[in-house]
Length: 365
Ligand code: PLP
Image 1 (cartoon, rainbow, N blue to C red):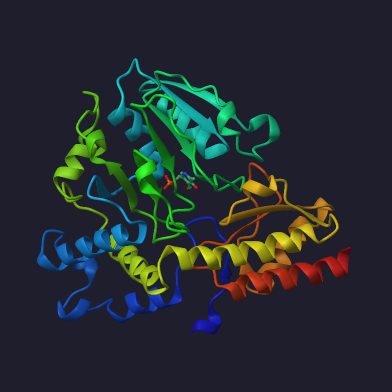
Image 2: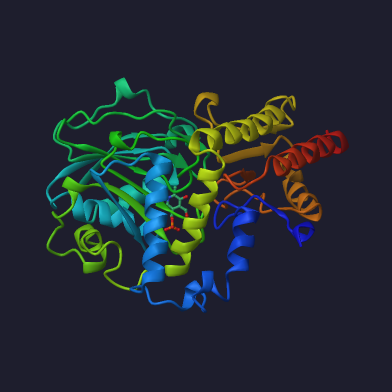
């Protein structure tokens, strides 16, 4: 029952909306009279066609995606996109620019180095990935084919609040939006490619969503495996091979839910409120809790924080788990704590965490 559910602050796979899970449960054995589960359907049958088409059209509504863009439902996670992007968008000798604001951007850059000539034009590493660069100070290569960013660094909790423009007017901006996808409105027309693993904000793991301007499709390097060629997937409406059918179905249910909430403007308001009360609790703790990220670029989705008395961190995580708030341990590379508060984390979950933090401080402060 609902009472048995924990508040899951995991970074991904992450909590999903309870009403979405209930809906999926209600049609698990017999999807809308089909006499079978979505897991058992042919991906080429009319039932699944209606599912994937509805998922795509609802996502187009949510993000106001124009017909100039293709929407692809792929596999391989965002990690596969780290290779797909350079393989499809440039030649081996092409220069491209990366802004590295955390571990994920760094991984994307390192993968690109196998397929083109990437250059890190800004790295937040010296400041332990706590900030975003001033765009007018970026030293962009005028010949770069694209400029890559990670819109929200899941581990470090650093989020772009607006976006840089590529200096080369023929180049495009490309963003890994895995951990803030559909958490707020985004002007898709500013981007050449947006990609995201589903397992944070919009569904289970196994689905990777790519939104790509159509003129970027069809230029893959000769060595590109067929599964990594955007043209193959675009020409076949994401059905070139067997897609992650059930995951796509779940994403579709989440998109419906986000539309029913009033769309991404309303969703963002909720996310701002949740993040605000958590950051306020940290900032008002007189140093007992600390978030290292520059205030103006703090993530609405992933809130990293440390304890002044770091020896208490394990106890914090353990005590919180006893109260049904799980997965609060920070990523192994940075330590401390991290609360991921994606779309599906209810306000009540954040309020409970904040109350717990105050109690914990009263006990140990
Ligand atoms: N990019 C970001 C921002 C992430 O948070 C993750 C998280 O897992 C990844 C990429 C890697 O995604 P995947 O595990 O889907 O390959």
